[in-house]
Length: 158
Image 1 (cartoon, rainbow, N blue to C red):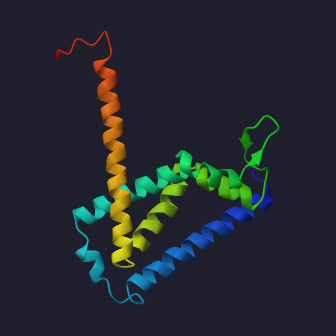
Image 2 (image 1 turned 90 degrees about the vertical axis):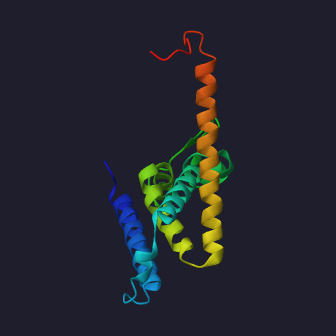
Image 3 (image 1 turned 180 degrees about the vertical axis):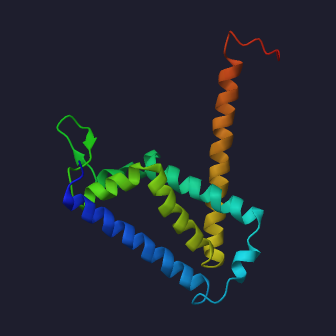
């Protein structure tokens, strides 16, 4: 059962997210009057934004290089493992960071806002997207390697 304190923190984070999305939208559309950018987005833009969002989500929720940040919001136990705090803002951060769906929303907002900030933002999004493609190729090559090393696999299509 979620505590009342935790519900307050979760509500605060939801409101902050909505305010950030609204402020970004207001900024991108020039006060809500310029929607030209929406019609300029093409399939390549959507692919770049999607791949970059995937990479941000993976970075925040799973990658070792980001573990030190995830650990800021966890309590270290006597046996050396980490556990979410029982309540408070640190628990909300811990839950946000471990949830792929939650991190995906925040990451999606971050990537889109960054993309529309100009050339530097687009450059950063392209780096994230290329990194995501590299991750996909790595996983694919590992899968192919496992299939090739499987002694029960005959290599013949049935």
